[in-house]
Length: 171
Image 1 (cartoon, rainbow, N blue to C red):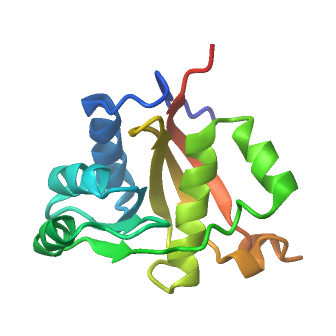
Image 2 (image 1 turned 45 degrees about the vertical axis):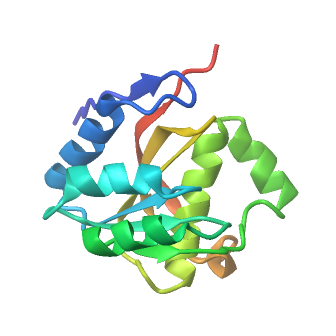
């Protein structure tokens, strides 16, 4: 059997309608219930949530705190906000450096998927979205797992990247 899926390659840091369109398409095709977004200030999560309204829930993760107005807008859109999150990959030097070979967005996407799993917000397949330079450029279909399962001897308990929807084009 041969399965062909196109990967969208974007310029690093560019927030594009193409990335959001690709995420919406895969959410529908795979019947994904949640999209986890790395969103420092919340704007990216709001844009993704607008596109996914009525289709999937959005979980927004930041290591900081969101502005009061942004939190209100997130609540109105039904976004679950995770603030002041500890970054579980950042302190694992080998893992961090290996993931950065694929770009900041790949590391951040897997990090927010792990944070959502650790908080019990999502245990099923998700789409994890992140980026670099102030924009979204990465989207992965992920089987999330909490950081405590990163090196589990049981491969089914570990996090896994199931599909690359979009990632930055590195020149």
